[in-house]
Image 1 (cartoon, helix red, strand yellow):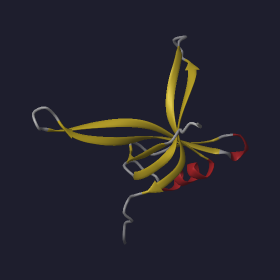
Image 2: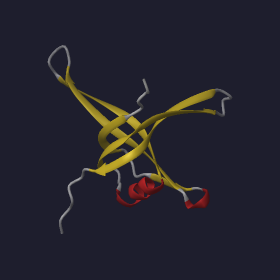
Image 3: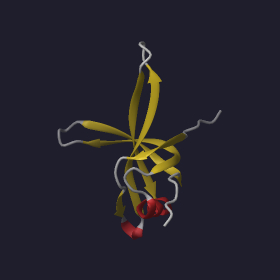
Image 4: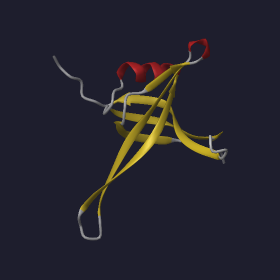
Length: 113
């Protein structure tokens, strides 16, 4: 059986995308996305939990992110998980898990006027 690496999220941007241009004019955008979960605790009180995700969008999706996404934008993201490692200034190996966007859909209502 083959594996499946798929993530589907709906949330709000924590800040405007950070866009970089790499060699050969390839754009990459990185932004944080907040998803919220609501539940009732043992006492029946409404509680909220916010999870933050790091989204990375390449090429055409980076262009879309740069042009249309702003802090607070509501978006649908479909992508895959990717974990990478790097050597920190402390000399220790650190791991980062990011979501590589394969689809971005804007969910904000269009402003009229």
